Amino acid sequence: MPARAAAAQMLIEEDRLLDARAFLRIERMRFDNYFTELVMLEVQLLDEMNQPEDANALLDREIARTPDDASLLYMRAMRRWEAGDIAGMEQDLRQILRTDPDNAEALNALGYTLADLNLSGRLQEAFELIERAYEADPDNPAVLDSMGWVYFRLGQPEEALPWLESAYMQMPDQEVAAHLAEVLQALGRDEEARQLIQQIMQRTNLHPKIDDLLERFPELRPEHSPDLSPELTPSEAP
Image (cartoon, rainbow, N blue to C red; front, side, top):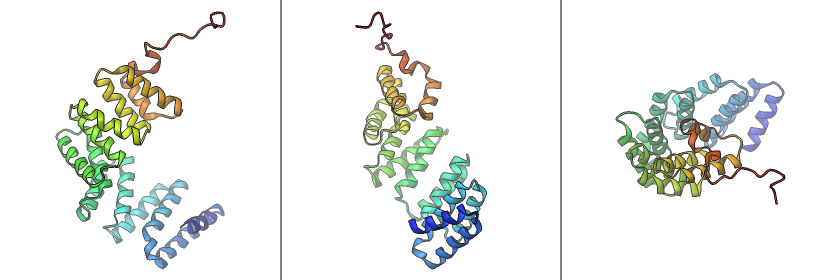
């Protein structure tokens, strides 16, 4: 696969995108075992060339030929989610679950999306999907994060907290941190939330999930911490 990716990239760099796509199409016919990976590679290359419409058309065409390919369906589901097509995303994830009811990735993605959007009347459904994902993959921190988040959406921050703490210990990224900080805030533990947010903001300059949280809860900005003392002036410094 790395060799084929490099060959296709070389053709693209020579302004031969059509030849690169033809090469990958031939390779898919020659090596059926790598069909899915080669389709996903071509989608990635088209995205890098800023041709998302062609990438989507390729996915649609190949999924029509192999309607039970879970990897391609999941890839299209995530692209549909990014485009705001939640119904299309759900359709693809449901198709995966029809053939593989215990697919933890699909269960978690659908359950988390329903919980995150806080869709009226669907939170219990979200919980049941995430619970099934947990049964299938109990050590997955993304599933632990989803479980904590759906408990929070259900109005149970105390129940949510240990799930999110466990998820953050294994996967300390900004999305899990934002969830954990919001739960801490709901429990009246603002200072712990500020410290957590400060850790993320010191780690990276790009933190859109934290920025979104701070827009809703500006009091959680680290500078609002009562433990932060003003900096000493040069004359005051020891």
